[in-house]
Length: 198
Image (cartoon, rainbow, N blue to C red; front, side):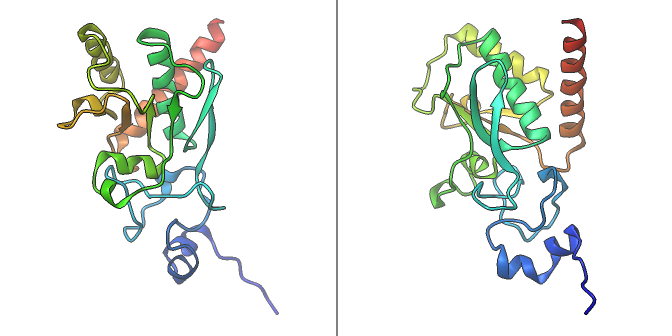
C-alpha cells in the first residue's frame, strides 16, 4: 500500500487540526510567523496561543546569552528580538538577575483580549512580575522609552498601558508584519558585526 506524506500546510489547514490539535497549530514550522491559519486561537497581538508541552509548539526554553538565565519564548525571530531587548535593559537600564525573567504563561479567561494574553503565545515576558508601579525613576522611564524606539515600535511596554504594569513587555506586531522581520534582521546583522569586532 502506497503511503502519502502530509505536508506542513495541509496539516495546518486540514481536518487533523480540529481533531488532534485543538489548542495549538499543526506541523512544526521553524518560526511561528509562518502560521497564517485564521481559525487558531490568538493572543492580543495576533500570534497563535500555544502550550510549550505540545510536541508541535515553537515555544522553547531559550537562553539569554550574557545573563545566565533562560525563559520560555517562541524560537527564531521572536527570541532574537526579545532576548536582545532584555540584554539591552540589563546592560543599560537595570540589572536583570537570573530567574528575573518570566516568559510563557498559561492564558486565563480574565487575560484574554488583553496584553497579558501575549504571554500565552510566547511573544511577551515580564521582568520581576511582582514589581510595583513607579518602580523606575523618571529618567529610567525615559531610558526605557528611548530603548523601545530603537526597536522601531515592535515592542510595547506595560508601563504605557492605562493600568500600568512596568514588568510587562510584548511584541506589538502580528507575525506577518514586515517591520517585525526587518528589525530581527537588523539585530542579527548588528550581533554578527559585534562578534567580528570582538
